[in-house]
Length: 339
Image (cartoon, rainbow, N blue to C red):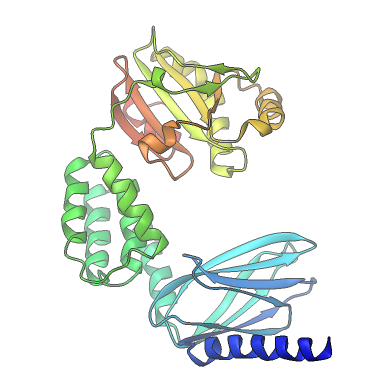
């Protein structure tokens, strides 16, 4: 048994050493805290590398990254998981942070990674442009082209797509720009999201909703028919989605105004049928009595429409044709000036 253990340890050592020796990026994480942290893990957003360590004041994570990438820091306090996401350069990066009394992760300084501050400042500056579509698109497109061969460009592409999902000409422009990308970034998570969503949005996405199966509040299979309304707003959501819940409050507060414009709300949850009791409890507790369904598992509308962000809204006319998509209910109903 001792010999077997020794051989096993040797094998593990041989397996670990090459990973360390080929590390191109070392992220040293220092966390000051007044509450007990159980463990800390770190992975790249595409989940190609994942490392979990017992908590110490200073932790060191070795990655095989040679350029800018996006990382998730996950930490556990009293068996509850928290997460912080940050973009960093390759190299020897030092992240100094602390936890608040509520376990919130606060970054104090980041050393040897100028891109961390570039990204933060860019998003802060571009946020004020969102009400001016021309200025916002110009700023994002300029930044995207500057980083076309970097992973950051694909994050920007996703943001650009979400913002312009009702402008086919702008989406075609983005597709043309991305076609000039010489580097293969297909492994990167945001690349996969961007390409998938862009492809779906540029397709003819009309559909016949009666072709899809749903589950009603009694747990029985059913279908949805569109009749007697000028418009239908399809709300795609799930229970553990805070922005979905916030939008439901807005819908509830404005339901009379929405109905007055002959718009019917149809909410479709992507939660599995096993969550039927919790789903029903949530709807009953808040008195959300508009049409609510669970999505059946076999042939899903979200897959057909390429929906991966939640909440997502699809506005249909009386013929069932898609006339607008959005990621907030206020944006989806913007043409109707409901406030």
